[in-house]
Length: 451
Image (cartoon, rainbow, N blue to C red; front, side):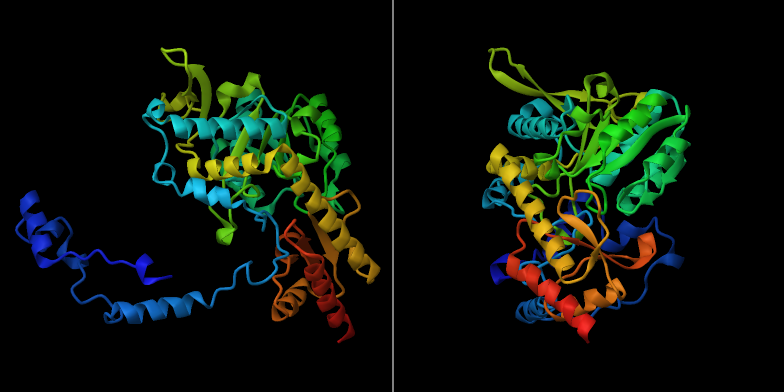
């Protein structure tokens, strides 16, 4: 933080007097006449005394220096938010004032640049997912999953959802919360080691099931067999909802080609910093037959009066534009700026770059897991995995994380609270992790065993 970045906008006594005169009020006190006397604050606010700008700047810098970023320590935690390479062109584009000041295109056709950016985002996500249409984005991947469940229930007229416990715990919590308002019953399927138990899934799927929900790769990093899940869903007339990591789709078969009816996820791996967990950018992909039930907006391409290429808001099936009882969703907005960042990142990487980046994640994680096994550590995953896997440690995972932090490494995600597996640690190796960093991580765990 520099002095050039730190500015005050003070109101002088003359400024206040002028503003009060414009609105026809004699004093500041008159602005609060509607607030009962009994609940008004009579004393001064209990805040520290004012300090000079220089003193405050020093205090703020001192506080900021207590934080440790992924740029200072290697981070091996994934679990939904990942430390990926972000091309410098991303910040250059989204920092342009015409983009970062835009909220959402209400006078849409006047915002051709914004609409084109969203259109390109939709097109690239549709190609990755293997689906026919993608919306302009939602708040995050978990919100997208919740909306997918709502769409499935509306289309099938059924009220049961079969949800794999290999889906991200926070995503499952959002689904459960939203299901209450929709009158849906959510039935969770236990995992079998690192993947969904398909025998249990088959037993729990009934003629009342609206959809089966799986994650691809799942929360433990393993790749689910979507063809098997699709067959189970199809036999009972249910839909298949897949929550997919879009970067992994650079090398995995597209869910749409394996029979998915709805594909959702989060584009955080493409151009969005971790930022302590958000904001992210959810995507929502369907095939043509479900397009009118999609939440949010869809941008389409057309031609203007002069025959030139133009972009329009083709579909807005949300409550703000139509009768509430006919709306598909409460979703009133999209993550335009974050969708733009993801679109710029994907465009900068290109098709080959996305595939290479995805392959690097596979390679780094494979080296990491093999090196751990060579040192005697047990790996939970028996199925192929992307960039995450679970280590079965001889001691509590939290102890390992503390030892790693003392060694200057941000560790993984303990499965103690969410899966009641205190000795299991979910770790991630993205394309940014080096062999030296991975070897240091393993050395710390080895040191704990020998202590």
